[in-house]
Length: 114
Length: 109
Image 1 (spheres, rainbow over the protein chains, first blue to last red):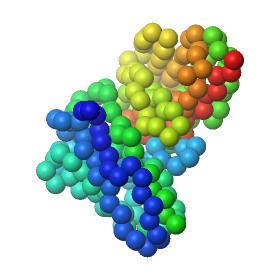
Image 2: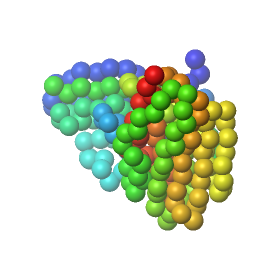
Image 3: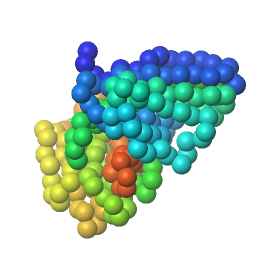
């Protein structure tokens, strides 16, 4: 499978713990996005990378959230001191540069904070 | 979604045609996408419009009017498997692709 892959697919954690999600984009896709989605809502933009540079972050992204893409390939999203409100599906997406290129989504990582 | 509006729910009958509308702010607009999302799954790409007019792809068509900040997704010959959420998304400013809240379509027999 050469699609966008995310790991883990499901994570249950206790409030206050840190969690990290990994995303492997489609090979050679230089653009990578992280989104968060809760039930009944559309995906909410979190952050965007072009190669290894983080070019945009949502104002909604608190300082407990950090994302990296150290070599311009895979990316990680870490949430520190998790809260129950962080429970959501975290989606990663990738695309080649250029307007109109299809943005492909991974299957998502479900987070439940108890 | 940021300045992207679409109806919350729609119901249609198998075999019928349904039109899902989407309006968006025009400032900074750089293209409009439609995605389909089944419950618990990732969004999958349906269409992209950047110029005015209708793009047809089999049973699905998408229309765009840039001056009106308006798009619609047209689904023909509805099938039960078309029951899903349909997401309108646009690049409005910066790099982010901003999504609407999605329209939940229920296809009934």
